[in-house]
Length: 530
Image (cartoon, rainbow, N blue to C red; front, top):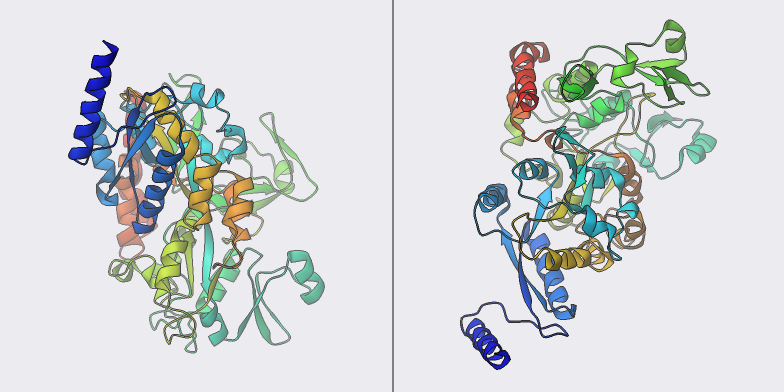
């Protein structure tokens, strides 16, 4: 019988080679396993992933062969959904923080807690916990950030303020790289944008406040439609910013809040709060405030559920911050009123990176995943259209908190996979030191641990020079609204109008609220009535 089996294996391997199929690998015990891995990305990501898979196939001693299939980014989500609904599924997939919840809801992804607990190669505790939490989900409560683990964090993409050094120099703004303490000692201010003895300065180590951001953007804007502009500027727009997250979160606002209610089956419900007009509060220096049994230390923002219970005495210990609606109005005004950020008719005819790389905008809100594109598309400084560039912290409201969003992806195992142990062994390699070093060392992605970020990601010979900004941002930046609920229908209900009509100046936020607030809440309620 053993001879017959060996003969059949030999015939199968020969056929595989003849028809160009995966070669039969062999471990120390003569066994072999082939797993299917699907991913997506641009050309750089695909090539790096191919190299990572090739190295695993060559070096693993378990007889595991990984077949990697890159899928066109625009088709990926639908192809995965189709595969999960069918009989033939890949064993390992890449999931973004916006796709993972719907795939869990469909029963498509395997729980990974036990694998992770017994692994010597993967240490969840060493990873960025904000990133790890995006792949935890309580399917009964339909709440993210808790419950079972369904993905192993692969990378983050923290956001920073990219800026064009040539544009700053053209209007005689000098760039400083000093800590707040050093700047205070030398110039008597810890502002991020200021004037001293007739010279304007911009700090790439200190976050701009909202007033500074607007003033700086106006000084770098030559747009004829801008009420306040600088004809000396070589950039049409001072800034290109694509979302409201960093503004709302900086003051403690959000578009969705969980409100506790013991009378409800799940102990509470999500409330749509994009247009919340109540002030927020952060605790002043040297003070503490206790509300509903929760103590808030200096610098902390009082939670949405607690701010309504603040007494006058409590408020005296706090800074009053803008509301979520105030933050939205500031964001919208950058394009619709001030003209310092391009309107939708401009952005629709350009790639998001192209507006910055072509020199149309002096500043650009973007993540780590933009660096590879910018490195390859921005001309060198000696080219007429070229310029040097760097990054600075994302702006924050005065007395607010540092904020901003980051994207992320994770490795997941499909529930229907019959080769989960082999799939996990590949994930241990890909999300472990070897795989993470491969991707981060090439400057493609930000790794899943701070230790690797410090050791591998920060590269002095690569732009941007100020990469340390990302190390700080990765600690606190959050997933965007796409990762909140198990469907994006509630976002589509209002976001399309916001990104076109409101930013285009043909609809006000008040009109958007009137048209979409109730219908959005109805969609959200529907998730929890099922």
